[in-house]
Length: 386
Image (cartoon, rainbow, N blue to C red; front, side, top):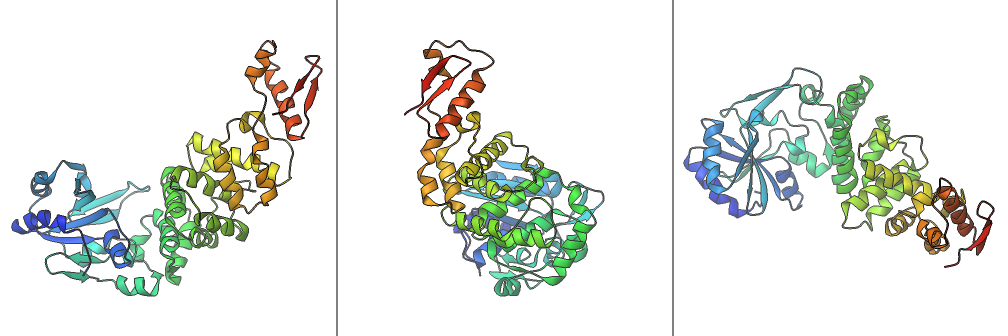
């Protein structure tokens, strides 16, 4: 038996009165067995006449979003939970890409057949609400207990290459070991170029979940390395730093993601733009990677335009994750530019195309610890003391 929110019994009782069989499925069942709280609940409804009947029943409990109607899915927010109600279905690959599936909805399908479309055995466990019992046709409970990640059906698994990345994410989140047969299957899919079918937005979302939802992202990242997925360069030093950061990460996922990706892309020729289209995220990551060289004594030059905009709190966390010497972290305030364009205006210096060059020269002198700098182009000395 699993512990689901009893507020949902109001909906379940109404469905039961309409001769429907209610089975909670997927991630909520898995998380409940692992004693992990979840607000997302997937519910399969069997033995109902049509999708329209399901919609009509649910309308009593709130606004029904039928955006997934072609897949037999409708969404409902109720009592603080995000509910996905669906009719049992089978998916068959008909074309390349994540949209190339033919979906067959069948309210009278048996649970084992419906569950066979799922990716991993640990996600193919159901809970019959009326009978109050687990449904486990693929021995997912045993795999959960022995911490093994296993595919439900290898022939169906290969129909969706995104499942390769999901495998890495689940291994990291729940500290699982991938089944040998599944590892070989994933490796063969990669060799056949199946990841190339995926748009980078979907790849990025899975990497994002792996990094943010795991207490030990290194497990999933090492699996990606072993599978020879060339999204970024992975080594033991990076894995150590990434796991190190997860122990003191913030409550702000945007900050956490920026730092984790910066750790991942540090000292590599791989381009973050190949993973995400977010210009603000890539700009923040590239700024961190540039500025941190100053603290590692690899260069004494930092671009003024980067330094004046960098978030010092994020930089401090990034340096901490890298285990940079405390003495270096103590000088973090030294990279804040003292002289700005406004200060040049106050000195009566007219704006010109040389402005950026002047500011960069002053800033580099500041980094060298100089108190004043003579600028031949202006024929004057400028104090750069705080």
